[in-house]
Image 1 (tube, rainbow, N blue to C red):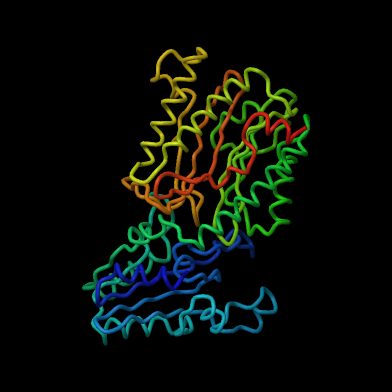
Image 2: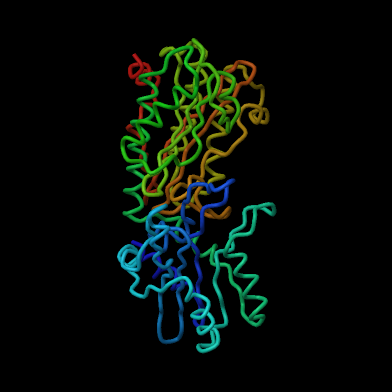
Length: 408
């Protein structure tokens, strides 16, 4: 898969150009500790390598394409303390790249490409979500190259990678399906073990254990385990309150498997039985979920899907007297219904993208009624196909009767 990803990206590069991609390094925490390392997802998409500090270069000239991986030299002392870094042979086996060099050779090789081969364009991943994010290794490299070689054209490869990553191949689909299957088991473990007067983190612990037991590499994101009024906070993550008899509890969570993510939401009654009012609100959200799934297909935008969800939600809320007109829905529904899913939970996506075959998106309508301490969100993961979509998480209980039966 990674060879094919690189080939597709090279087709988007100009001749006399050089791509440089960094795996990254674990950020410093404090004292002698670092945060857990996870590879830059665009680097991983092109190499399959998940080791720290590794660099990929792809040289494209009129005559050839040269791919090179740069790894750390063997360090016997560090190997005894923290384990061995990826070797040349391992890097080649994973990435299917034949030319493997050491990191201390990187500067000279890049200089020779520029000076000897007349490279005039450098492609770097210059993604930046906001101004206050610290500079990345790619951004630092851009500044270095501009200083030392002011005639070079620095190009941002990120938009090209976005386009490729939007459509998932069979390998990626299987990884995401596995992540969803693991998530299903974790949700069921929570539903079967929850009891009134537990703490939210006790409920969450059942999910953590189950997904770890089944081989999840990590959580796709910080778990939301929000009971009662907490469920009306969209990204509540404290997970430290007592769950009360008669309340609902909202789960928004996912397992990560080989760096591919699941993203599922379910809302269940703490005591195993929905009240009539809870059923009423839940049914409106479920109708919106089903309406989006029914309409999702190539050619639509995520805004189109959100408009579909809002129409159903506002109609349901007006019918039960919660709002008087559609414009008031924003008091109880204030997010979008969908985002892309893949190597990132909120996966790469351009705002003007239209859905196409092979995209995987979430479907997550909700209603959040703070004055009633009711927050309900339901979320499935959808694969866009030629004439519609396939619900990849349809085997996770979501109907009221199925949830109550699971819990009782």
